[in-house]
Image 1 (cartoon, rainbow, N blue to C red):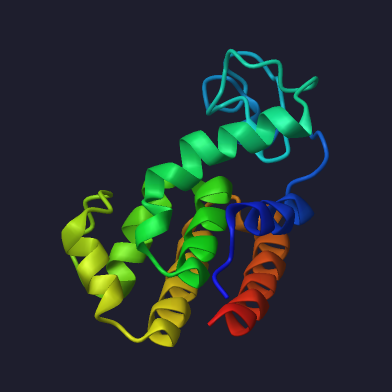
Image 2: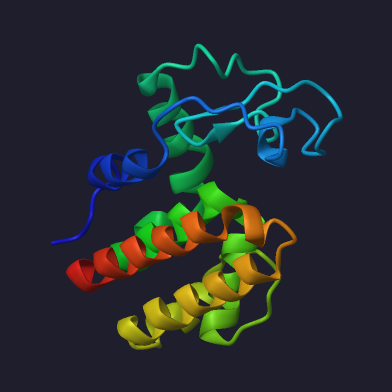
Length: 173
């Protein structure tokens, strides 16, 4: 049975629940640059970097869910791609940015990494065995994380998140 947005959101909030205001996390700054702009934090995975005008601290769960549906789920053409894959891409997009997640998915299926999930990318995804997509995508995700200069600070958490995602991939495929 395909994963619905509501179910995916419940899973995501398991990773992205509480308010954080970590000065070392660029996502918590309105400019996306540590020490520049306003330190407004992240709540439910909605960051000041992505939504600098939003009152992050007072964000409701319902508002976060509406943002995720409108700005994230719908913008990755979720209805045209197997839900097992979409959940993986969506979770990574929330954690590392939409463009990064789209490009890593494209790399996993061997198409140009332009960050546009259009008909060419969707066809490549649909032509590739689902387990291959899931495994290659999560491999790209780990490569990306280990390339970041914040790996020593956040790497353990990112790795545990990918481990959880691999468990979901096994359930969803």
